[in-house]
Image (cartoon, rainbow, N blue to C red; front, top):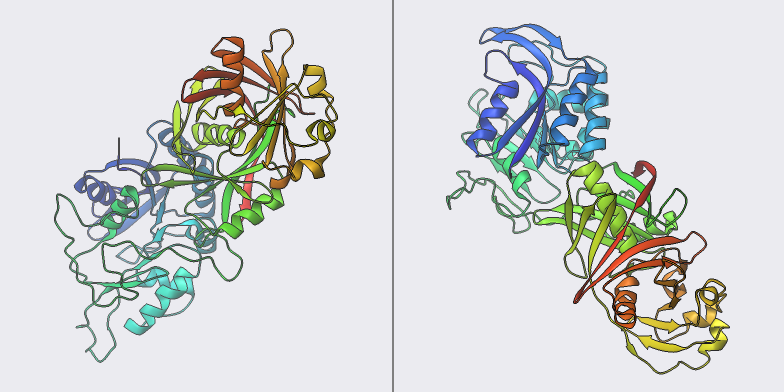
Length: 528
């Protein structure tokens, strides 16, 4: 199912606004509307005659049940009357839909003048929802409350759009229908009440006869490369009264650049963060990986700085793009092309917290990487990287301080076969010499003991990894080697680092399947 929109807002008994109007808009665009009702109103065309707030925990429960079952491609909030309700909604988003685009309509006053937002709730709305929104859609009175000043004319409206964007959201649709006069030399009451759609680049000025509120939600669901007004080949019926930087309505704007104030991802103040032990049979074993879920890509320097701060073998960054999930991995020093344990950890995050299900496919620098559930395990489907016989590097036995039976290599890896699992476990390599080898990664391996078919250890000091506790990508090399050597496709592997980890591997020709269990350790948010 595509085009799923979860609407969290108040119910309008008259059907002209609130959830009822949002359902009509989503349905008109062939989307699927799910709802979490935050308030019940008694109103008609004459005004609002009563408001009954839904308990915050029940609002959150509605959201949880929809997001963990049906899911959502876009979230849209409307009337959220109190601080506890705003906190409940924000908490549910962080727990169950941290990477789903959010549209915030900061409903504050009904058309008839009735207040729909508690006096102390505006700041909570900004801090908890506006700062993380992909789009906010205030009218003039709501923008005046958010900014604490009047917006009397079109020039003030344009500046207000800029200032609202500075609150942290990615785009602002400022609706001008409540402004009595337009300024710019036009008579009061007869100004063209143009809306303002403002992004980091460019600003669009929209004719009021063709509202784009629902179309923008459709664009967010369909992806940033999609024309918000195009269905069945028809062009959107809007007129651009101004544009910059070569952009046109319906085309993707230039990507937002990182803020000069140190924010890595404009439009977000925090990002969901997990630390997960991958290939771990019990807590505090396996390989810890950090997973950061982002709404869009920051610059590489920011991601590298986060990975260095985490100081784990790898930090994975995830972004949900129109075609699906995209993953990148960073060690404390560099970006790498493939990482198994951080992909396993990322899949656990997505399948348990973001998009519950049985499989996820990540686009990556190494091609598509599928991860699926198999009972309690998650199984990676990675490209095989079989090693070829290689010449013994000068001094390799001195570097390892152990006899080496055989040497093989891939483009990046030097594979040294030792006599026994005990020899692998006892290795204390000369790390400076390892860093000076022609390959950036050194894998030591030997036959296993008992039910374990083979063992290994992995060293990559040149990439900032002295020893990797458990290395999924190394088993793209090890699995085809040992499957051929032992004459079996399915094998049990053990990595003999201090933390240790167990991997269930299968040689599938050009692919390798690598299965393991995970142990979550930390969940929270990082400041951007």
